Length: 421
Image 1 (cartoon, rainbow, N blue to C red):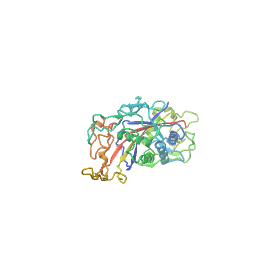
Image 2 (image 1 turned 90 degrees about the horizontal axis):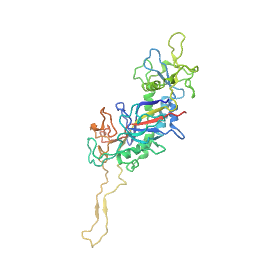
Image 3 (image 1 turned 90 degrees about the vertical axis):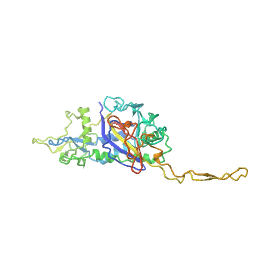
Image 4 (image 1 turned 180 degrees about the horizontal axis):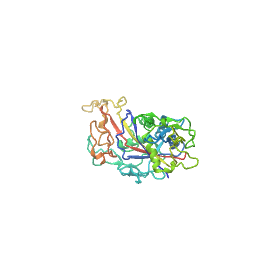
Protein backbone atom coordinates (compact mmCIF):
# COMPACT_ATOMS: atom_id res chain seq x y z
CA UNK A 1 0.00 0.00 0.00
CA UNK A 2 1.33 3.44 -0.93
CA UNK A 3 1.61 6.43 1.37
CA UNK A 4 0.71 10.04 0.52
CA UNK A 5 3.18 12.33 2.28
CA UNK A 6 2.60 16.04 2.81
CA UNK A 7 5.65 18.30 3.11
CA UNK A 8 4.33 21.05 5.43
CA UNK A 9 6.34 23.91 3.91
CA UNK A 10 4.95 26.70 1.75
CA UNK A 11 7.82 27.58 -0.58
CA UNK A 12 8.28 31.23 -1.45
CA UNK A 13 8.57 31.55 -5.25
CA UNK A 14 9.01 35.02 -6.73
CA UNK A 15 9.88 36.40 -10.12
CA UNK A 16 9.84 39.61 -12.11
CA UNK A 17 11.78 42.83 -12.12
CA UNK A 18 11.79 42.71 -8.34
CA UNK A 19 12.42 39.44 -6.53
CA UNK A 20 11.16 39.67 -2.97
CA UNK A 21 10.61 37.43 0.02
CA UNK A 22 8.30 37.42 2.98
CA UNK A 23 7.57 35.35 6.03
CA UNK A 24 4.93 32.92 4.85
CA UNK A 25 4.50 31.24 8.22
CA UNK A 26 1.25 33.13 8.78
CA UNK A 27 -0.32 32.13 5.46
CA UNK A 28 -3.23 29.73 5.89
CA UNK A 29 -2.71 26.61 3.78
CA UNK A 30 -6.17 25.17 4.19
CA UNK A 31 -6.02 23.67 0.71
CA UNK A 32 -4.12 24.08 -2.54
CA UNK A 33 -5.83 26.37 -5.06
CA UNK A 34 -4.15 24.78 -8.09
CA UNK A 35 -3.01 21.17 -8.36
CA UNK A 36 -0.29 19.75 -10.56
CA UNK A 37 1.55 16.46 -10.87
CA UNK A 38 5.21 16.19 -11.78
CA UNK A 39 5.68 14.38 -15.09
CA UNK A 40 7.66 11.23 -14.29
CA UNK A 41 8.02 9.58 -17.69
CA UNK A 42 10.82 9.75 -20.23
CA UNK A 43 14.50 10.50 -19.83
CA UNK A 44 15.86 12.46 -16.86
CA UNK A 45 12.91 11.54 -14.66
CA UNK A 46 12.86 14.21 -11.91
CA UNK A 47 11.00 11.86 -9.57
CA UNK A 48 14.00 9.53 -9.56
CA UNK A 49 16.15 12.37 -8.26
CA UNK A 50 13.60 13.25 -5.58
CA UNK A 51 13.46 9.57 -4.53
CA UNK A 52 17.25 9.46 -4.33
CA UNK A 53 17.45 12.61 -2.20
CA UNK A 54 14.73 11.58 0.25
CA UNK A 55 16.46 8.21 0.67
CA UNK A 56 19.53 10.12 1.79
CA UNK A 57 17.58 11.16 4.90
CA UNK A 58 18.20 8.83 7.85
CA UNK A 59 16.46 8.37 11.20
CA UNK A 60 17.62 6.72 14.41
CA UNK A 61 16.61 6.24 18.03
CA UNK A 62 17.34 9.12 20.39
CA UNK A 63 18.75 8.86 23.91
CA UNK A 64 16.42 7.40 26.52
CA UNK A 65 15.99 10.74 28.25
CA UNK A 66 15.41 12.65 24.98
CA UNK A 67 11.67 13.00 24.39
CA UNK A 68 11.85 15.32 21.38
CA UNK A 69 11.41 12.58 18.77
CA UNK A 70 13.76 10.51 16.65
CA UNK A 71 17.17 11.72 15.49
CA UNK A 72 18.00 12.60 11.90
CA UNK A 73 21.18 12.31 9.86
CA UNK A 74 22.10 12.31 6.15
CA UNK A 75 24.05 9.63 4.36
CA UNK A 76 27.76 9.95 3.72
CA UNK A 77 28.57 11.91 0.56
CA UNK A 78 25.77 14.46 0.77
CA UNK A 79 24.62 17.49 2.79
CA UNK A 80 21.34 19.23 3.47
CA UNK A 81 22.41 21.96 1.05
CA UNK A 82 23.01 19.47 -1.77
CA UNK A 83 19.71 17.68 -1.16
CA UNK A 84 17.84 20.99 -1.25
CA UNK A 85 19.46 22.06 -4.53
CA UNK A 86 18.73 18.71 -6.16
CA UNK A 87 15.04 18.79 -5.18
CA UNK A 88 14.83 22.41 -6.38
CA UNK A 89 16.19 21.50 -9.81
CA UNK A 90 13.97 18.43 -10.13
CA UNK A 91 10.76 20.40 -9.52
CA UNK A 92 11.44 23.81 -11.04
CA UNK A 93 13.12 22.39 -14.16
CA UNK A 94 10.79 19.41 -14.46
CA UNK A 95 7.41 19.44 -16.21
CA UNK A 96 3.96 19.72 -14.67
CA UNK A 97 0.66 18.23 -15.81
CA UNK A 98 -2.94 18.61 -14.67
CA UNK A 99 -5.95 16.32 -14.18
CA UNK A 100 -8.88 16.14 -16.56
CA UNK A 101 -11.54 17.61 -14.26
CA UNK A 102 -12.14 21.35 -13.91
CA UNK A 103 -12.78 22.35 -10.28
CA UNK A 104 -13.12 20.96 -6.77
CA UNK A 105 -14.67 22.48 -3.66
CA UNK A 106 -12.73 24.49 -1.11
CA UNK A 107 -13.18 21.70 1.42
CA UNK A 108 -11.46 19.15 -0.81
CA UNK A 109 -8.23 19.06 1.15
CA UNK A 110 -8.91 16.27 3.58
CA UNK A 111 -8.72 12.52 3.40
CA UNK A 112 -11.68 10.86 1.73
CA UNK A 113 -12.34 13.57 -0.85
CA UNK A 114 -11.72 12.12 -4.29
CA UNK A 115 -11.11 15.52 -5.88
CA UNK A 116 -8.11 16.18 -3.69
CA UNK A 117 -6.62 12.98 -2.34
CA UNK A 118 -4.23 11.19 -4.73
CA UNK A 119 -5.60 7.99 -6.20
CA UNK A 120 -3.53 4.81 -6.39
CA UNK A 121 -1.82 6.10 -9.53
CA UNK A 122 -1.00 9.42 -7.88
CA UNK A 123 -3.45 11.60 -9.80
CA UNK A 124 -6.26 14.00 -8.93
CA UNK A 125 -9.61 14.29 -10.62
CA UNK A 126 -9.71 18.10 -10.82
CA UNK A 127 -7.34 21.02 -11.45
CA UNK A 128 -8.56 24.09 -9.62
CA UNK A 129 -10.39 25.04 -6.50
CA UNK A 130 -13.86 26.40 -7.22
CA UNK A 131 -14.64 28.64 -9.06
CA UNK A 132 -11.40 28.67 -11.09
CA UNK A 133 -8.95 31.33 -12.26
CA UNK A 134 -10.62 34.78 -12.23
CA UNK A 135 -10.70 36.41 -15.65
CA UNK A 136 -10.41 40.20 -16.14
CA UNK A 137 -13.76 41.93 -15.71
CA UNK A 138 -13.94 45.11 -17.79
CA UNK A 139 -17.32 46.06 -16.41
CA UNK A 140 -15.23 47.38 -13.51
CA UNK A 141 -14.03 50.87 -14.37
CA UNK A 142 -12.25 51.95 -11.20
CA UNK A 143 -10.25 50.44 -8.36
CA UNK A 144 -12.20 49.46 -5.25
CA UNK A 145 -12.06 47.14 -2.27
CA UNK A 146 -15.48 45.60 -2.78
CA UNK A 147 -16.35 42.00 -3.53
CA UNK A 148 -17.28 40.30 -6.79
CA UNK A 149 -18.56 42.53 -9.57
CA UNK A 150 -21.42 41.57 -11.88
CA UNK A 151 -20.30 39.42 -14.77
CA UNK A 152 -17.14 37.98 -13.19
CA UNK A 153 -15.93 34.99 -15.22
CA UNK A 154 -13.52 32.17 -14.40
CA UNK A 155 -11.15 30.02 -16.44
CA UNK A 156 -11.14 26.26 -15.77
CA UNK A 157 -9.32 24.72 -18.76
CA UNK A 158 -5.81 23.29 -18.45
CA UNK A 159 -2.66 25.42 -18.51
CA UNK A 160 -0.35 22.51 -19.32
CA UNK A 161 0.53 20.86 -22.61
CA UNK A 162 -0.27 17.16 -23.03
CA UNK A 163 3.37 16.24 -22.47
CA UNK A 164 3.78 18.60 -19.54
CA UNK A 165 4.92 22.21 -19.12
CA UNK A 166 7.73 23.68 -17.02
CA UNK A 167 6.91 25.50 -13.79
CA UNK A 168 7.95 28.94 -15.05
CA UNK A 169 6.01 28.65 -18.30
CA UNK A 170 2.89 27.57 -16.40
CA UNK A 171 3.26 30.71 -14.26
CA UNK A 172 3.48 32.93 -17.38
CA UNK A 173 0.33 31.28 -18.79
CA UNK A 174 -1.49 31.66 -15.48
CA UNK A 175 -0.61 35.35 -15.31
CA UNK A 176 -1.74 35.88 -18.91
CA UNK A 177 -5.03 34.12 -18.15
CA UNK A 178 -5.82 36.17 -15.07
CA UNK A 179 -4.71 39.53 -16.49
CA UNK A 180 -5.57 39.17 -20.19
CA UNK A 181 -8.12 36.37 -20.34
CA UNK A 182 -6.18 33.60 -22.12
CA UNK A 183 -3.04 31.51 -21.38
CA UNK A 184 -1.42 32.59 -24.64
CA UNK A 185 -2.35 36.29 -24.52
CA UNK A 186 1.25 37.04 -23.53
CA UNK A 187 2.05 40.00 -25.74
CA UNK A 188 1.80 42.41 -22.80
CA UNK A 189 4.65 40.62 -20.99
CA UNK A 190 7.98 41.96 -22.19
CA UNK A 191 10.24 39.51 -20.38
CA UNK A 192 8.64 36.04 -20.42
CA UNK A 193 12.03 34.36 -20.71
CA UNK A 194 13.36 36.32 -17.73
CA UNK A 195 10.39 35.23 -15.62
CA UNK A 196 10.91 31.59 -16.62
CA UNK A 197 14.60 31.87 -15.75
CA UNK A 198 13.81 33.61 -12.45
CA UNK A 199 11.55 30.71 -11.50
CA UNK A 200 14.03 28.05 -12.61
CA UNK A 201 16.74 29.71 -10.54
CA UNK A 202 14.57 30.60 -7.55
CA UNK A 203 16.36 29.47 -4.42
CA UNK A 204 13.98 27.02 -2.77
CA UNK A 205 17.03 24.85 -2.11
CA UNK A 206 18.06 27.02 0.82
CA UNK A 207 14.47 26.99 2.09
CA UNK A 208 14.54 23.18 2.05
CA UNK A 209 17.94 23.17 3.76
CA UNK A 210 16.84 25.62 6.46
CA UNK A 211 13.50 23.95 7.12
CA UNK A 212 14.44 20.26 6.90
CA UNK A 213 18.12 19.96 7.64
CA UNK A 214 18.71 22.24 10.59
CA UNK A 215 17.59 21.81 14.16
CA UNK A 216 18.66 21.31 17.77
CA UNK A 217 20.78 18.51 19.11
CA UNK A 218 19.87 17.08 22.49
CA UNK A 219 20.41 19.72 25.15
CA UNK A 220 20.37 22.65 22.71
CA UNK A 221 17.69 25.34 22.71
CA UNK A 222 14.57 24.39 20.70
CA UNK A 223 15.27 27.15 18.17
CA UNK A 224 18.88 26.07 17.56
CA UNK A 225 19.81 25.64 13.89
CA UNK A 226 22.63 23.10 13.95
CA UNK A 227 23.27 21.61 10.50
CA UNK A 228 22.35 17.96 10.05
CA UNK A 229 25.22 15.50 10.55
CA UNK A 230 26.63 13.51 7.61
CA UNK A 231 27.49 9.90 8.45
CA UNK A 232 31.17 9.00 8.44
CA UNK A 233 30.44 5.74 6.60
CA UNK A 234 28.05 5.36 3.67
CA UNK A 235 25.07 3.06 4.09
CA UNK A 236 25.25 1.88 0.49
CA UNK A 237 22.79 2.78 -2.27
CA UNK A 238 20.89 -0.53 -2.17
CA UNK A 239 20.90 -0.85 1.64
CA UNK A 240 18.35 0.39 4.14
CA UNK A 241 21.02 0.41 6.87
CA UNK A 242 24.61 -0.69 7.38
CA UNK A 243 25.91 -2.22 10.60
CA UNK A 244 29.20 -0.41 10.03
CA UNK A 245 27.53 2.98 9.53
CA UNK A 246 26.73 3.99 13.10
CA UNK A 247 26.57 7.45 14.61
CA UNK A 248 26.75 9.14 17.98
CA UNK A 249 23.33 10.08 19.31
CA UNK A 250 24.81 13.35 20.47
CA UNK A 251 25.39 14.29 16.80
CA UNK A 252 21.81 13.77 15.62
CA UNK A 253 19.39 16.66 15.25
CA UNK A 254 15.67 16.97 15.83
CA UNK A 255 13.56 18.54 13.10
CA UNK A 256 9.82 19.01 13.37
CA UNK A 257 9.13 18.62 9.64
CA UNK A 258 11.20 15.47 9.24
CA UNK A 259 9.51 14.20 12.41
CA UNK A 260 6.12 14.77 10.73
CA UNK A 261 7.24 12.80 7.66
CA UNK A 262 8.47 9.99 9.91
CA UNK A 263 5.14 9.96 11.76
CA UNK A 264 3.13 10.01 8.51
CA UNK A 265 5.02 6.92 7.37
CA UNK A 266 4.75 5.20 10.74
CA UNK A 267 1.04 5.98 11.06
CA UNK A 268 0.21 4.86 7.51
CA UNK A 269 2.50 1.85 7.07
CA UNK A 270 3.95 0.68 10.41
CA UNK A 271 5.02 -2.61 8.79
CA UNK A 272 7.78 -0.71 7.00
CA UNK A 273 9.49 -0.24 10.35
CA UNK A 274 9.21 -3.95 11.29
CA UNK A 275 12.60 -5.24 12.49
CA UNK A 276 11.58 -8.85 13.12
CA UNK A 277 13.38 -10.22 10.06
CA UNK A 278 16.59 -12.16 10.62
CA UNK A 279 18.62 -9.71 8.50
CA UNK A 280 17.12 -6.56 10.02
CA UNK A 281 18.64 -4.57 12.85
CA UNK A 282 17.01 -1.84 14.89
CA UNK A 283 17.74 1.86 14.87
CA UNK A 284 19.35 1.67 18.32
CA UNK A 285 22.42 -0.30 19.41
CA UNK A 286 22.56 -2.90 22.15
CA UNK A 287 24.49 -2.19 25.34
CA UNK A 288 25.26 -5.28 27.42
CA UNK A 289 25.95 -3.14 30.49
CA UNK A 290 22.20 -2.50 30.94
CA UNK A 291 22.50 1.17 30.03
CA UNK A 292 21.66 3.37 27.08
CA UNK A 293 24.16 3.13 24.22
CA UNK A 294 25.73 6.43 23.20
CA UNK A 295 25.56 5.37 19.55
CA UNK A 296 22.69 4.56 17.19
CA UNK A 297 22.06 2.74 13.91
CA UNK A 298 20.60 5.16 11.32
CA UNK A 299 18.08 3.77 8.81
CA UNK A 300 16.75 5.26 5.59
CA UNK A 301 13.25 6.71 5.71
CA UNK A 302 11.13 3.90 4.20
CA UNK A 303 9.79 5.81 1.19
CA UNK A 304 8.83 3.26 -1.47
CA UNK A 305 7.61 2.98 -5.03
CA UNK A 306 4.16 4.52 -5.68
CA UNK A 307 4.34 6.69 -2.56
CA UNK A 308 3.58 10.32 -3.30
CA UNK A 309 5.19 13.46 -1.88
CA UNK A 310 3.37 16.79 -2.16
CA UNK A 311 5.18 20.13 -2.29
CA UNK A 312 3.41 23.46 -1.82
CA UNK A 313 4.37 26.71 -3.57
CA UNK A 314 3.03 30.24 -3.64
CA UNK A 315 4.44 32.02 -6.71
CA UNK A 316 4.26 35.81 -6.85
CA UNK A 317 5.39 38.16 -9.61
CA UNK A 318 6.30 41.80 -9.01
CA UNK A 319 4.99 43.88 -11.91
CA UNK A 320 6.64 46.98 -13.33
CA UNK A 321 5.81 48.93 -16.46
CA UNK A 322 8.26 49.42 -19.29
CA UNK A 323 9.49 53.03 -19.05
CA UNK A 324 11.54 52.90 -22.27
CA UNK A 325 9.75 55.20 -24.73
CA UNK A 326 12.58 55.31 -27.26
CA UNK A 327 10.64 53.05 -29.60
CA UNK A 328 7.22 54.47 -28.80
CA UNK A 329 5.05 56.96 -30.70
CA UNK A 330 6.49 60.48 -30.77
CA UNK A 331 4.52 63.69 -30.92
CA UNK A 332 4.81 65.43 -34.28
CA UNK A 333 2.93 66.63 -37.32
CA UNK A 334 1.44 64.95 -40.34
CA UNK A 335 2.39 66.72 -43.58
CA UNK A 336 -0.49 66.50 -46.07
CA UNK A 337 1.31 68.59 -48.75
CA UNK A 338 0.15 71.99 -49.90
CA UNK A 339 -3.15 72.06 -51.71
CA UNK A 340 -4.54 75.49 -52.48
CA UNK A 341 -7.98 74.04 -53.28
CA UNK A 342 -8.52 73.16 -49.63
CA UNK A 343 -9.62 76.01 -47.37
CA UNK A 344 -7.64 76.36 -44.12
CA UNK A 345 -5.22 73.68 -45.22
CA UNK A 346 -2.14 72.96 -43.09
CA UNK A 347 -0.14 70.32 -41.30
CA UNK A 348 -2.14 68.34 -38.77
CA UNK A 349 -0.69 68.26 -35.25
CA UNK A 350 -0.30 64.94 -33.44
CA UNK A 351 -0.30 65.07 -29.65
CA UNK A 352 0.09 61.37 -28.79
CA UNK A 353 1.98 61.37 -25.47
CA UNK A 354 5.25 59.47 -25.11
CA UNK A 355 4.78 58.73 -21.42
CA UNK A 356 3.24 55.39 -20.51
CA UNK A 357 0.17 54.95 -18.35
CA UNK A 358 0.66 53.93 -14.75
CA UNK A 359 0.53 50.21 -14.11
CA UNK A 360 -2.18 50.61 -11.49
CA UNK A 361 -4.45 52.20 -14.10
CA UNK A 362 -4.17 49.04 -16.22
CA UNK A 363 -4.35 46.30 -13.60
CA UNK A 364 -6.32 46.90 -10.42
CA UNK A 365 -8.78 45.39 -7.97
CA UNK A 366 -11.46 44.22 -8.50
CA UNK A 367 -11.05 44.21 -12.30
CA UNK A 368 -8.14 41.82 -11.82
CA UNK A 369 -8.83 39.72 -8.73
CA UNK A 370 -5.29 38.40 -8.24
CA UNK A 371 -3.62 41.82 -8.33
CA UNK A 372 -2.51 43.21 -4.95
CA UNK A 373 -4.72 45.73 -3.22
CA UNK A 374 -3.70 49.40 -2.95
CA UNK A 375 -1.29 50.13 -0.12
CA UNK A 376 -3.15 50.20 3.17
CA UNK A 377 -6.29 48.51 1.88
CA UNK A 378 -7.86 45.54 3.60
CA UNK A 379 -8.96 42.24 2.16
CA UNK A 380 -12.73 42.20 1.43
CA UNK A 381 -14.70 39.63 3.33
CA UNK A 382 -16.03 38.22 0.04
CA UNK A 383 -12.49 37.05 -0.83
CA UNK A 384 -12.20 34.89 2.31
CA UNK A 385 -13.90 31.80 3.64
CA UNK A 386 -15.48 31.60 7.07
CA UNK A 387 -12.09 31.01 8.70
CA UNK A 388 -10.43 33.96 6.99
CA UNK A 389 -8.55 31.87 4.44
CA UNK A 390 -7.92 33.35 1.01
CA UNK A 391 -10.05 31.86 -1.74
CA UNK A 392 -9.53 31.59 -5.50
CA UNK A 393 -11.47 34.76 -6.22
CA UNK A 394 -9.22 37.05 -4.19
CA UNK A 395 -5.76 37.73 -2.82
CA UNK A 396 -4.34 39.04 0.44
CA UNK A 397 -1.32 40.75 -1.12
CA UNK A 398 -0.99 44.50 -0.59
CA UNK A 399 0.80 46.87 -2.98
CA UNK A 400 4.14 48.26 -1.87
CA UNK A 401 4.67 51.69 -0.36
CA UNK A 402 6.07 52.94 -3.69
CA UNK A 403 3.00 51.80 -5.58
CA UNK A 404 4.51 48.46 -6.69
CA UNK A 405 1.86 45.90 -7.53
CA UNK A 406 2.10 42.14 -7.39
CA UNK A 407 0.43 39.24 -9.14
CA UNK A 408 -0.59 36.45 -6.76
CA UNK A 409 -0.55 33.00 -8.40
CA UNK A 410 -2.01 31.40 -5.26
CA UNK A 411 -1.02 28.13 -3.60
CA UNK A 412 0.12 25.32 -5.90
CA UNK A 413 0.33 21.71 -4.82
CA UNK A 414 2.84 19.73 -6.87
CA UNK A 415 2.63 15.99 -6.39
CA UNK A 416 5.56 13.67 -7.11
CA UNK A 417 4.92 9.95 -7.49
CA UNK A 418 7.94 7.95 -6.36
CA UNK A 419 9.29 5.48 -8.96
CA UNK A 420 11.05 2.18 -8.28
CA UNK A 421 14.47 3.68 -8.94
